[in-house]
Length: 583
Image 1 (cartoon, one colour):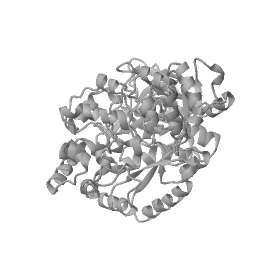
Image 2 (tube, one colour):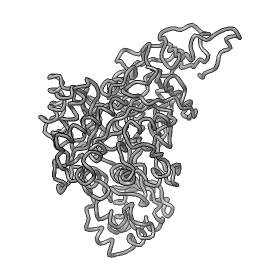
Image 3 (cartoon, one colour):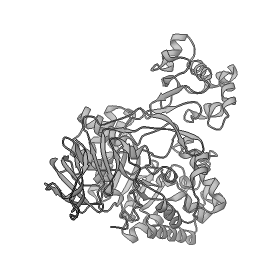
Image 4 (cartoon, helix red, strand yellow):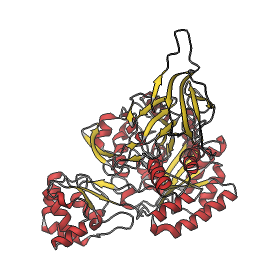
């Protein structure tokens, strides 16, 4: 198998740019798979079926390989990373051909010049993007939302991007930082200005709006449902957490008036009635965030799924987005912020390396850490952490802190601190998140109103690499566990998100559609264990996970991945309003 350019003769003009020949076509539309060819011309699928040899500049032999639509990743935070990483990795290494940015209400526009640093500070906390990297790589050649889209448009891209409008920058622009943070209710005139700005952003190409609304309207003194992990850099709620329901309805009405767009919303504390009013007012699909595949939440999800079904029966398009994967959190104590305030105080990201080492060696500090919880509801605790790599104890690799502590006859806090100090903060650990189980994953896969994914691509760079979710979905839950069919999987990974997000001419393989295509070896499809890479601007590092078994990935008809390697070409486009200008 392979590909080769054809010698068409000096006077022959090729009818097609590329023909993918003799593949197993899974079109993403739930049709049965079949063996056939796909011809591509000028970035589009020109013909499918049987295509005579000798008509293309390049032929790709896909014998024995699956040919399917590229994956669409609805939940990413590549808003900053697009300026330094055209492949938007980890996603771009795992068959993703289009992403949606601006999730959770976070973003960088509109932003006045004097608040640029403040905007980046927020993103260092809620999405754990290194400040040094943003400062080194973001051009900041915009203030308004349309100006930011123009800047993204100019950046080289190997993937397509569709942008939300984050509610937080809107609130800060209109109300001012202090009033937005305080949760002041906008006046009628301010609501009108919020609506005008959203119209302006949609005119420029935004696909809708997003928000994290996890607090109490107008009351910043009440902690958010997400707790410290979802708070602003100073520990306070984000503006959208304390926004008013009336403001959400103003923004929903913009979409209803336009008859386009969709909404992404983290608002588990909101009443079902309010969700339904947003859906009715906007007439748009709403993405309910987020559904972890947790064995602790199976009963809760059953009630939620019954509500999704009821909404669909009444014509209200409310969908859940599920964490349909089980990526480990891989970290060192150089950067780790998910074990609560006490660990944060003595070993969090804001503490210098020298001070961390001194703290973790200090018996008094250890006593305070022992008084803190060892276990956490939705993340692996201190005693559950497993050693991935240790310079001072190779024999400990694969063991949990609980096992090491028991063998040494010490408290788990002493066991982990001894390791970290001996390795000079270089010990690599992994913990699980959300008590994810196969039963929980199957529950999400079985529900037709749950969109797979939630990669959080571009965020939490120093301990999470979940952009491999589609690779995991097919290799583990279709191939290994037979939870669903390949036809259903590709519909859920491409066509359903395309429908919900308003992508035009993407998400399925059909004549006339944009040629976003994955060609992979079903039996060899896999992804690597997340590993550390020192490849960020500002001399920073991250973890990433490359896909395996991807023979070819095409974006707009151009091969961007060949035999799991980048071809370093950039055919991706900013999909203004869900479409490229060529469409």
